[in-house]
Image (cartoon, rainbow, N blue to C red; front, side, top):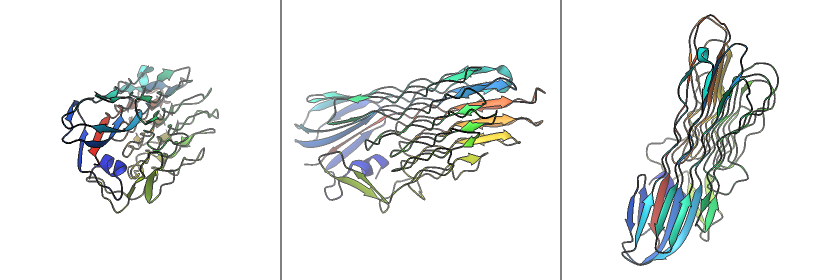
Length: 370
């Protein structure tokens, strides 16, 4: 059972036939009947930014792909053309001595087109990088159309701080359930020059915002947002419920997801350095933010779990060594990746390296239910 099939399959009415597409192709209905179709667009790539002491910089996360769901009756032999949107590209690697920034790029649109079907799940926008002026929007979430249900993906967190830095925000999550927000956490802190990073969005709630000081915030959970300035991950639940479709779907902890040993459905915690409770968010949990300020350590944002956003990574170093920072990658499928911002305050040539990840590609899932 895949993550996606466990999401959309009914508890008491399993699929007669099912298939998912991670690359473009053609679906031919094997029999006449009713089909459920899910399409998710590609996630946006995170931005990067690097600077020296006295120069501010910021990098925002990419937006998630749109979500589109439809039930349609197909006749045996009906052909549907499936196009899978690629994940958006990451901002180029930076070094803090270069004083430069690179934007991420947008994810591609996922489409399903054929007799009675014209679905589009657009890709999420790329994150934006900047030096000096650190006011930047996050990548916009992808819209969707042509389904019985169409949800716009969560956006990457924005940065509206007027002082401080480096700042890096988390990527957006695919909005599976119509949550009020699946955005990565935003930064509006204006206190000092501390590094600040935020968590990625979860399928049921946003990453935590940073409104004061430095530090990092947690990623959103499967059903819960993270409170502002809080490093713990968002809340999760034992069972996901899809309440917006004509049929009631659910998946529980007793249903396994191959290749993923989950501990909780909550988001990852915001952490100092590379400590990964960040790497154990459950399905739908956003990656936590990672930060280093002053001390010597490498720094990673958390990788988002299925569909969720990756965490941002912000590093400000003032000792005599070189270190690496990396924004967290968005989760399969359609998650936006977190931004990465680095500053070297010593002026002594000890360079900080920053990188981030491309957004995740989209997916299409089709099942016949009778």
